Length: 366
Ligand SMILES: *Cc1c(COP(=O)(O)O)cnc(C)c1O
Image 1 (tube, protein in one colour):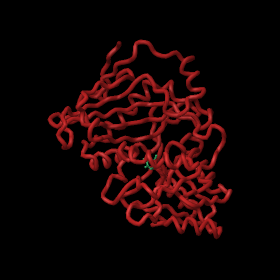
Image 2 (cartoon, protein in one colour):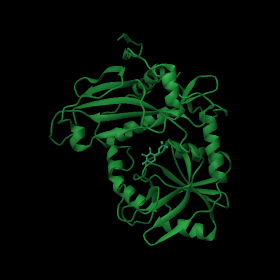
Image 3 (cartoon, helix red, strand yellow):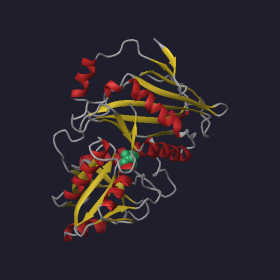
Image 4 (cartoon, protein in one colour):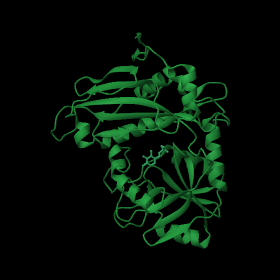
C-alpha cells in the first residue's frame, strides 16, 4: 500500500489492487441503490481529550469495534446523505454540502455526539470522492450519481449510560442508478395511526438511525396494506401531517399556492425541501410553511383544490404521491404532475450543470 499525507492532513492509504475501469463500468451499468460501495472510506476519530484526530482515507472495509461500544447499546448514531453529480465536462459536483455539515452538527447536539468542523466534513467527502472518482457515473447516463453517506457513531467501550467519550466519523460512497429506473411512478402512502415518528422534544429533527429504526414497524404495516411508504402525523393529536419516514411533503393547490408542513422540531429539515421552496417562490408561487391537517388533505383532494401532492428528498428528488390509504378508506390523488415534474427537472438541471447555478448551490469535488 502507498501511504501519503495530503494538505488537509488526511493520511491516504490506497488499495493496492484497484478495480479495473471495465469492472467499475459494469457495476455502473446497473448500480441499484446502496448495495455496492466504492473502494475507499474516510475516517476521523474523536475523543474527549484530543478532539478530532487521525483523519484518514483507507480501503473500504469493516470497522473493528468492541462489543461494548456505546453505539451497539444506546444507539448514539447520526448520518447524512448527499450526492455527487458528474457534469458534461467531466467535473464532479455536490449540492449544498454546507447544509449537510450544519445539519450533522445539529443532529450531533441532539444525540450528545461531538460537533465536527464543517471543513473536516467537506474535506472528508472531497478526499474519498477524488480517490474514487471513477465511481461517479458518466454524464448523460440518466439520473445516476454517487451517493455519499457520512455518519458518526459512539465508540466508547463502556455500558454506563452517558454521552460517549469517543466517536468515529466516517464517509462511505455508493453509486446510485436512476431512482425511477422504469419511469416516474407515483407512490402510495399509508397513514400510520398506531405509530408516530417523532414527538415534541424528541429526535424528529435529527437525522439519526434511531428514527429510522422506530419507523420500520409502521413501514411494514404500510406494505402489508398495499402501500409503498408511510405518512406520519403529529404525536399529540394525530391530525397534523408531518412527513414520510425519509422524505418531506408538499401540497400543490390549483390556484398556484404550495403548502408544506412547517418545521416544528418534529420534522427533518430537508435540503431538497428548502431548495424547492426557493425555486417555487422564484416562479412567483406562494409557498406556505404551516400546520397542515390530514382533513385538509382529504378535503382538498376531494374538492379538487389540491392538484398535486409530492414527497421530496435527496435520493428521489421529487416523487409524486398517487394514493393515500388508511384504516377504513383511501383516496386517489389527481393524475396531474405538472408542477412537481417541472420543479423536479429544474432542480436536476442545476445539480447536473445543465442550468445556471444562480444560487451558488454547487460545490466542486473533482
Ligand atoms: C434525510 C431526510 C429527509 C430529506 O432530506 P434531504 O436533505 O432533502 O435529503 C426528509 N425526512 C427525513 C426523515 C430524512 O431523514
